[in-house]
Every structure is written in C-alpha cells, then in structure tokens.
Amino acid sequence: MIRHPWVQRSLEAAVFDAQSAVLEFDQACSWLRSALTKPMEPLGAEVWVLDPALEQIVLVQHPWRGLVPPGGKVEPGESPRQGAARELAEETGLRPRLLERPAAVAVRSFHPDLPVTLSLSYAAIADPAQPLSAEAGQPALWRRLDEDWDGYFPQDPGRVRQYVKALRIDGVG
Image 1 (cartoon, rainbow, N blue to C red):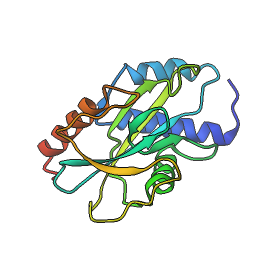
Image 2 (cartoon, rainbow, N blue to C red; image 1 turned 45 degrees about the vertical axis):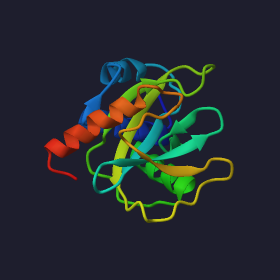
Image 3 (spheres, rainbow, N blue to C red; image 1 turned 135 degrees about the vertical axis):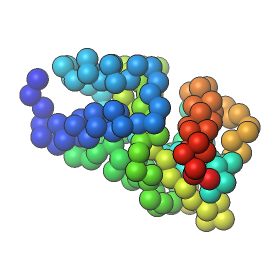
Image 4 (cartoon, helix red, strand yellow; image 1 turned 180 degrees about the horizontal axis):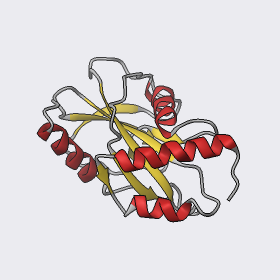
C-alpha cells in the first residue's frame, strides 16, 4: 500500500513505539501488523501524567467520554509521541518531558461510529502544584489512582495502575 510520506513516518514511529511499550493490550502489535496492509483511521495518543509519588493522575472531563487521560488524534506528519505531547499541552497547559519508553499500546474505538485504531499511551511525571489550564468545556483535574473514575474506557484505571506497578518495580516514584 502506498501512503503519503508524512503518514508513513507516523506509522513507522507508531510501530517502533508499540513494540517498545511497557504494556500491550488487545493484541495491539498483532493488530497493527495486519492494519498496516490497508487504510487505517488516524492514530490515537494520550499521556498518563502522574505525580512524583505515583499516587495521582491528570484527567480531562471530556464532553461525552467522561474522565479520560489527555490525548487525541495524531495529526499528519506527527509521531504519536509528538501528538501526545501536543494534546497534553492543549488540554492541560502541562509540558513535562514524556518518559522515554511508551507506557502502553492498545486497540480502541474513540467513538461508537468509528472503527478501531491504534492508541499509544505515554507517561510523564509532573508536580500537582503546577496549575492546569484546560480547554474550554473540558476541565482538567488531578485524581487519586486508588479511586476509580467514570470514563468511556472502563479498563483505564486498572491499566494505569498496572503501569504504575511496573514503574515502582523499575524504581520510579
């Protein structure tokens, strides 16, 4: 399949990050190999912003998805990492350095009327005292990780906790 060079670069970065992710859900790497042979929905990317103690996460109140980590669609010409950082800055005003290794890769649909696509989750550590500046109509907040949250993806709290457990084993936090 012939793709525009910008799209091809984004997909190559996605493949690399998907293979490097700490956690894989939904057999995402296998799904991605298959998906690369046909047209694909835009990639999704988000950031799991954690406090230094790994006890809190930044969430955004999406108009209909509920509480979700900041993120969105990867734009043409962006790597998923760049898209995640851009979305984080747009939705929260935060610009922390993303941790080197992607947190997770999953396959999801971001709307009931859309097909599934690849979603990459990155992580960052930020000071909860730093002010959040949310997009209009999408307040951002810190939430304790030992509390569940209502969101479009009910498995998210458990996945983030699983990632935090891996971080603690690696000596972060």
